[in-house]
Every structure is written in C-alpha cells, then in structure tokens.
Length: 82
Image (cartoon, rainbow, N blue to C red; front, side, top):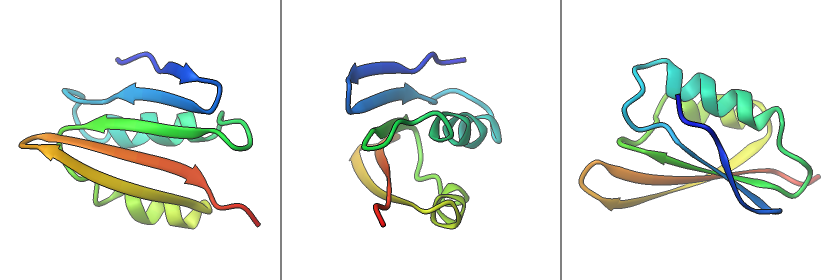
C-alpha cells in the first residue's frame, strides 16, 4: 500500500495506482479524515474515480481531476470552507 507523502504543509500526496478496488477509495477516504484545515490531498490514480466523487461531495469536499495522459490522473481534493 502506498504511504502518503507530504509535499509541503498544505498538501499531502498519495499514489493509489496498482491498488485493487475498493482500496484506492478507502485509502483516500481514510486520508481525508486526517487532513488539517486548509490542507489538500493530491491523489495519483490510473483512472477517473467515478465512485469516489459522490462520497467526497457527501463529506463536504471539492475536487478537481486532471488527465495527464493515458492511465494517469491527478485528483486534487480539498474541504469546502463554510
């Protein structure tokens, strides 16, 4: 399993490529519970995590997905500020 790497104080990075479902989603949701206020989670994934998006929205998170190339997506997740 991939260990999250803090890039800086404001961003945590996790690479979930190669994990079998549902482990990528579970890993992301686990890390979101530990984010400090103002921190973002950057997820490196091999596909667009369509089942994750509704879970994020239910928990008050916003997200942006970039397709970097075939089989490489970068998803940035942050908490919606009230």
